[in-house]
Length: 347
Image (cartoon, rainbow, N blue to C red; front, side, top):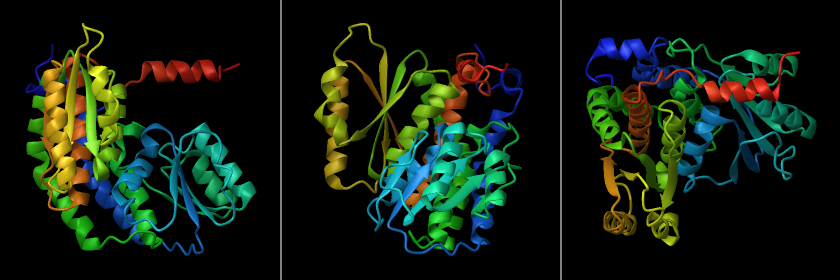
């Protein structure tokens, strides 16, 4: 088993520098925020929003939905698949997000958005989606992924998450002050060493167990992301649930099978209202009484945005360290690659 404090051990398992990409989350956020800030996006008369993306490229949509659902004045849905919802029309804003620009489901949605006459904005680093912008004179941003040395799309989290938020902010759909983003990125940068220490401790607690990620309200998107990161990077099965929804069913599912190896990670925040704080306390009690260990990470940022970015960083390091403990290369996704090869075999 590799030593989490031994850089030599880590480098042997991490030839593509996933660790380096994880440490550059603040730079990714800073870069994409400035890139979008300089764009001219004159989109108007939007009645609803569809954010299309798969896997890591949909992270921005999930965070957007949980972070700003109490401020959005128009319906927003995250679409993970080949087709747009039936309601999509010329008054719909379709945000197409694909880090690689070659995700087949998102490209399918791009063509459907074109056929429906929807207002379309693209967020990508290149590929066919970048060509789609040029060929159809559509709006979008093609970022240069200089702060993702691993080259792995799912390690470009900052580009996708803050890029999606920045686009909708630029359009006036949400309102975030530039100073709030700058302060949140500064917090992320200043808190990184502590985040890494906490991620190591959590990885050691989770090793050998199935992690369930619990969160509420504005951090629900983070729980979704950590689930995905643990699956892909750590090669560890994981699941996530939100409070209060899980209080109506999941607690009864902690009893069986008897040989279960579960651990529950609560993403906590001072910004949660009192009723949610009480629910978290009671949920931990139920978890304990069922012989399942509760773990907790309490975000320390001074705003919801800074806490979201902080936990985004935590998830990256947590999944990385757990991969190291399992002696896994965190960069490769052999079963995903195998599946894609079988889906579209080269003739």
